[in-house]
Image (cartoon, rainbow, N blue to C red):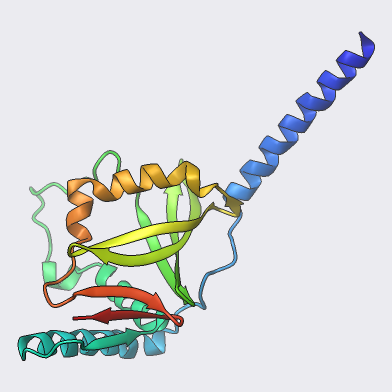
Length: 206
């Protein structure tokens, strides 16, 4: 009987210890997937990103086929920074009588995004907020396209520094991506035929 009690105590404390470690890993900041952006070259990289997209669109308009452009991680990250920056100046002041837009109940705020490319894998790291605490979500996988829409097949998923089995999150992720509102955001421009990650770069072709 005493041995059973001892085993129970060991299991109980081991479970408690595992829970504490799990929580600590959830809140721990993981290693960044890419170097921090240099503010001095953000504008330059963002302009390079836009110029390459324009080159692709012009090729399509001219009837050229098979044109492809290559984007580096700094170019993509700079484009993300500019695309997500608050458009205060262009929007102008909001009238006092106009209420501030409220986020959807299920919407999780994304405070920052950083991506990197390794061989044929894209890795994204997102800073969000859960229950009032900043938490990093890291996801890696294969980027592709199908029927004019971006596809993503994850190979790695982490919350904080805690790895989560992909099989646990992929069904929910694919369901979320298939949601009409999110799917519309995944629609490719008409001049983009395909995209993929190859040799550590994002490759987009028309």
